[in-house]
Image 1 (cartoon, rainbow, N blue to C red):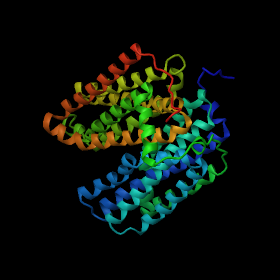
Image 2: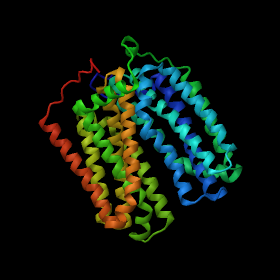
Image 3: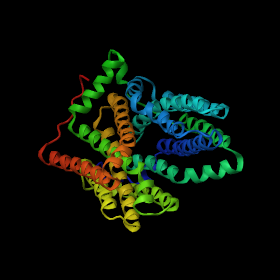
Image 4: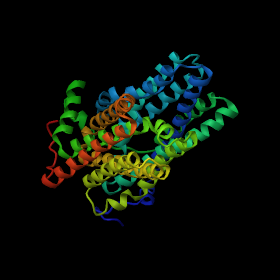
Length: 412
């Protein structure tokens, strides 16, 4: 049996029945989400003949709730019953998905997507807290890696499956399957016992703003968590800046076409899946903070290599390394968050972290185009890489010269 300091393997974590059921439900609902999002883009683009602005609003309406509502959602996750929150979130999303086939124009789709994402802002931190309560500390890294693998696999396989389904049966089949996936996920969660010390009810419940401030204060006063939030924000910003213009890079720098663009996009997901296979091995003899620094540094160097060596082999290798290192950053950051945050604050801190991540990604999407137009796409890539490397270097310096104190959140 693994000791307290030895990370559990994937197989060991999946032997935990409650985690396995939660993971199976996540597999179904995540694949359903990718099917539905693809179908929405297909409908708005080809059936409704949406303008570029209307098509871009699909992604914006989906991302905005994560950026702005997540901190508020985290407050209620810390107050509410976890199991009921997860099940209710799934069932509400199933109902919302069933409304999508009724939409006849983009302006009916946007509020449905906004509502779907709003409900998801409650599910995501609740799931993070649930994993913390179900899995022992030495298994958190593998458990988070498994959950992230589901997302990466859906990102790779979802568009191909959705394309085949839309061609054969029309886009509505994707919406019905997504609704069914949420119902299946809720049924799996209903069989899982989730016990959490209800710290929030033992204290006097304050205002939402007060509780949000408690979570924010914890982030900024805890050295490890503040570094993790800064690191993952920089990483997500750089990835979005990089990814937003990869099609233009392929067209104008590599002088290639859609086939290479599709291959490079898939390679990031493949690199992430491969990276998750090695995370718990690297974590055995290294601190998680240093793994975060290494992941961030690797991402920066991968982006710099793609910018410095403008040919197809370098782009292929760079995309694989980018995905590989991003897995180390994301999974390890999530694990550190779960380990270092007191359980009664975990919903708020997870919600705030989700908000910061999504805001950084939206900023990357918005700024990438004008920056590339002003300085050139390769120089913009170099700028993103330099930002990430500098933050990684600052993090390494901070870790070397500062002993992280134990968090005292008793008065939060």
